[in-house]
Image (cartoon, rainbow, N blue to C red):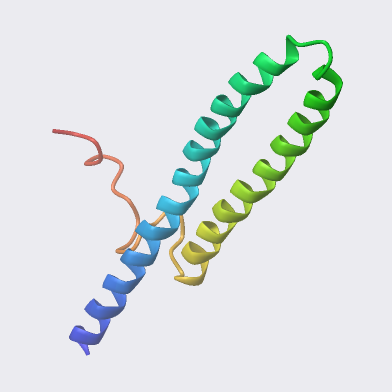
Length: 103
């Protein structure tokens, strides 16, 4: 029985790591993506002829990007929730605040 429990804990831990990786990775990638896109849109904003169209494309681009990255982040949250890992407890039980981040 203990071996089965250890196996379950391993899978829950893997789901926890992958789920949080999806969440945080999507957030960081969105920041980079939008910052690179903003450079191009700022360059286009200087040209009066394309400015109105560029601004509309920028709004659409940022909206679609936000929706896409939010969906990936949501999928990560769902992986963590489906694994049954509560944010305050982690995989093995309540976090020991006294021993965390101490060397």
